[in-house]
Image (cartoon, rainbow, N blue to C red; front, side):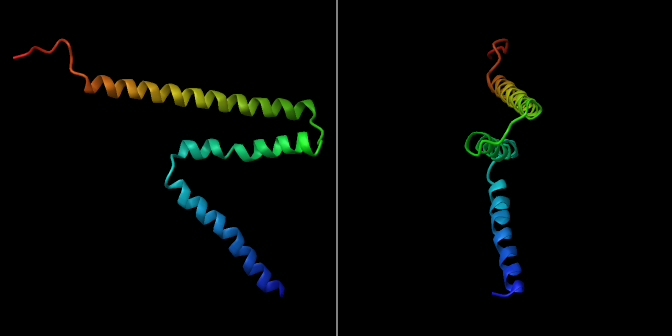
Length: 102
């Protein structure tokens, strides 16, 4: 197989997952996509550490903890915002007790 043919095939192999990702991003919320983007590095981190016995110096562990702490704060804020928006929407749809009946 010639080098030119292999390069063309590698382009196709690269483009197909990117096209599928583009289609998927139109079907689910961007917040979900953002959080899912952290699963791959997380899995690679633990695969390297636990399976391949890669050394994990304290600096790397601290960086890992900081990133996941920030993600926990982001998720907590998203849940809080979603709940307050739901409460506001529910209160707007509920009839007021102070309204006079005629």
